[in-house]
Length: 256
Ligand code: ATP
Ligand code: MG
Image (cartoon, rainbow, N blue to C red):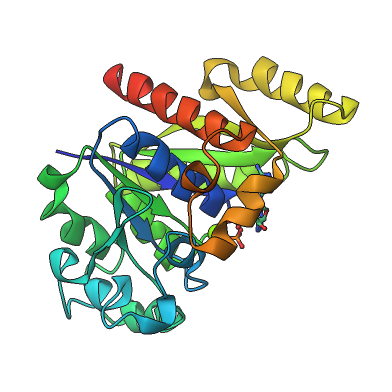
């Protein structure tokens, strides 16, 4: 049975997709079987894994609507060493179409159950919203990983996300918990970032992952080559941090 985690934060551009791709590759580098589910119509997780979103014949969209299954729709991300259930803009329509359907918030969960024993980890890259798509991710998952930048407004909006997670845990998915906050795009030369980072540790204790992902241009360049940063330049500080984060997740999961 796979352990299933959402990478979520309704704030845009905080490093969710970069985390999803590189954690998938980072865990795969530790010889674990990983499925990355792209749950964002932007399809960045798909493209960044080296799979052309415009060429998808089946995607997570058809899976959510019950038109195909995960085993048919998934593809292999060769360089990352993990499988991908891809997404493209078609998925934007699912939001509306799902509303009409029964059990609309548990459709991803039901679909993933079928392949769960084929993976150690399933990672879900959520869109920057608390939409029905994100809700499907939260209902399917055992836990949530929240990437955040250490800036002044970092905690803004976190309360909404925590609230949503608590409501989902209370009503729809009792398994769901916050696994941890991941500090990303970190620049140690910035005093403010240091201060916010310390505040996070003081407030959230061991819910803050000890691995910190630095701001690193190699991570930002990698998607334009269709490669996870971990495969693009394995020796870079960013890649090394995600490989370390992969190890931290494997360790943390063993204690859950
Ligand atoms: P969205 O909310 O639109 O889905 P996101 O939260 O998934 O965005 P990303 O797409 O992962 O965020 O990252 C936003 C931008 O920041 C991208 O251009 C990405 O390449 C860059 N980026 C992410 N992490 C890092 C990092 N550690 N160092 C440098 N650049 C980074
Ligand atoms: Mg994204």
